[in-house]
Length: 575
Image: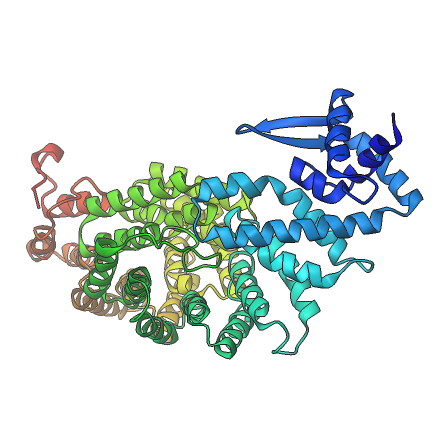
């Protein structure tokens, strides 16, 4: 083997995994080895099977075999050549990913990923060197900032968080130090924390750091990013009033911005209105968003346009439709959102559609076979990418499903673990409803005192946070528990709780909760010989429905109205 060929082989060892001809030329070329010799040397090494080739979409990638790379790296170290080559390698990939960051705004996702996703091992190697004691941390900061879109889309949230923390540590505490990169890094850190650690204090700190940098730069685009992030923090942590304030600030800031951002504000407001119990207003904002939405021309690497926001809006609208008494529409919307998310192959989009739409709607409607498949999908996809926040919520769904299907002991174990994790990660938007399901499970297990404690905690959390969407159902569960009380006041307290549930569900425009509350009250009356009143109470609400007659609640309502009517005698009516 000629000496120039040996030199090229040694220099190629700096690459981790696949590399391109352009990368080989950029790193291996020097004053004594011109580009033509690099090309000739690479061709000869391929012919000798010392370098493997891979063809992907008509593009040739090269790779040193692992054993050969390990051997040649030793030779590099013996000659003291590794450090200058590692610097050249890191500089090359800094330039590559800065170009990738610039292109992310304009290129189709699949095309962009095909160009840059396969380079991840060299990205990691470059960062390892840059942040090492002998490396160049400034290159590391630039490379970590530029790599954020790739981490976000794959998604590699733990890796993103770790590398961004390294970069921020280099920048230090001085706010004026590289404010544009600091702003992007803080936003990326906050996003990655949401998916891996929930709404921990450092998540809010990261978004606050991003907002401070955006304000310093007078950067409206990143103000929107950070307002969205702070909205998400407050919403997820159960502070509905603060979340609504951030949503309104976002909406106001979009007046002179793109139409997509204006509609994003509608989606944010619709979400908060739903969880606060204002279903008609929530539906208006969500439908406004869906009716007018056009995917933005320019995407962003952080949360706001990380994936098609119609997925999120449809998932939320599915919940609203179920509550308003349209189970079939809810099922269709949830399925459409999931189908769209799966087509994008974006893990966060898939998990979001499952958490907000598909899983809860399947549980609401009583389609437990479907719910089992969906919950398994959520747990699998979130585990695959280390998206632990989605896993916690998936665990809560799994616990509920087990209880609904009769495995109460195991289901309660899952729910207790989920409650602990929800509190630890401050995912308090989920807490009131989760405690309500826990209370129902405790009743089935004969643990009445624990059930009573859980439902009181749920109601208190709902009042404290403003998370009122499930409050009627919590009151109904409270009434169910009161009936089990041994003293004489249990019946009176149960009727009072059922009445409150009926009144509040009417006020919220939640026909689904209204039907459940009416059925619980009707069963109480029927046991006292007031069967006719019971039937008429349920019938009056049942007859408002125009669809969903094969869902669990409506089948139970039909049986309460007239148990003698054959199942097939009830016909679905067109809306």
